[in-house]
Image 1 (cartoon, rainbow, N blue to C red):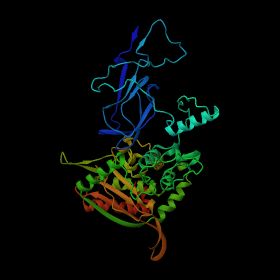
Image 2: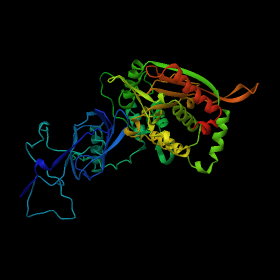
Image 3: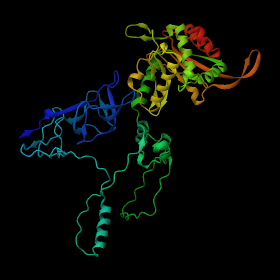
Amino acid sequence: MTTMTEASVREFRMPDVGEGLTEAEILKWYVQPGDTVTDGQVVCEVETAKAAVELPIPYDGVVRELRFAEGTTVDVGTAIIAVDVSGGAPAEEPAATPAPATAPVPEKKPEGRQPVLVGYGVAASSTKRRPRKGPEITVAEAAVQAAVQQELNGHGPAPVAAPAPAVEEERPRPLAKPPVRKLAKDLGVDLATVVPSGPDGIITRDDVHAAVTAPTAVPAAVPQPPAPETAVTPAAASPGDARETRIPIKGVRKATAAAMVGSAFTAPHVTEFVTVDVTRTMRLVEELKQDKDLQGLRVNPLLLIAKALLVAIKRNPDINASWDEANQEIVLKHYVNLGIAAATPRGLIVPNIKDAHAKTLPQLAEALGELVGTARDGKTSPAAMQGGTVTITNVGVFGIDTGTPILNPGEAAILAVGAIKLQPWVHKGKVKPRQVTTLALSFDHRLVDGELGSKVLADIAAILEQPKRLITWG
């Protein structure tokens, strides 16, 4: 007789999926107790202060227990799932009656008090039930079914057996990306009730917001049981009728808020502005779009602005630095990890292009395209958001002229790019319509003085006004 012991149970603990992270929120479980898992299979999705990450299980077995529910924030190092690596055999299995090789071994329900892992106590019940696939039958529905059965039996008074739960066909899982599911969860929207408008039936953010504001339709043909003659309780207001909506501050938004407050009150910010004629740069963008070496790549004004910043840093390397408060040192970086601020459904994130200073224009265009696409899909990894040295934020995409950007923590400078607009401009002694934008450079005044900051901003403006300087200066 073979007895399964607790030695066959392995615990998978919340890993540190990003440098220095201490906790993560469980967004969604992809498995349930009783499911078979294999090494490398994704079992859940978690959200850290940096990104949403899928966690694979590192061994084969049968899920025994999920330690935390979806929406729970768990400390790094805490066990979140228990897996029976023996294959899920019963507690006692007679050696003489092995199960057929082709049939799965049914899980036996042990009785009485069960041994548990040290530190987790004894479960109130040894029975593990998987979540129901459909709604439970209500008392009213049971009464209706009983009445129908009596009608079919000729109105006889014979008692009717208690109805079994209806076997309901499981609805297909609504198609939506993780950031959209997170938004729906925060707003209390059931994705099954949302009408999709995206390609292939994918639910978008706009669809979720539309579901929040849409009036709730009440079907008139469905008979309702009479209400009890008691005090009438007013119906709860739908989200569309509510005067306020409260959204928990956590994940990326929580981390961003803490970082911005820390940056604003730690580094003395100085912001300088310059308005520049970028007509020649816009012409160059159009020419580059036809270049065979850049076909299929992301070619836009941001590409040349990024290249201009990299050239300006090459000419003024002291701007690419950080302040080490503990050691009272200025740390000069001999590489540029170029951060690009991206507004995503999960909040503002700043992934960076590693060693951007060493990339050719086509390589920079390819890296920008990958960075933006990954951010939009909500798949930016924590590693992609670490180690940045300088950042660009493009507020112009929202039609904004410029702003006073706050430094990304640990960096000495951030460049804000405003909207590029056709404006009257004095060109060669005459007022002509020209493409004009305003740039704003914020820098840490502890290590960047006004002269250095001004030189960097002036170089960027000069390159965008005369982009041929990319060749002569680069």
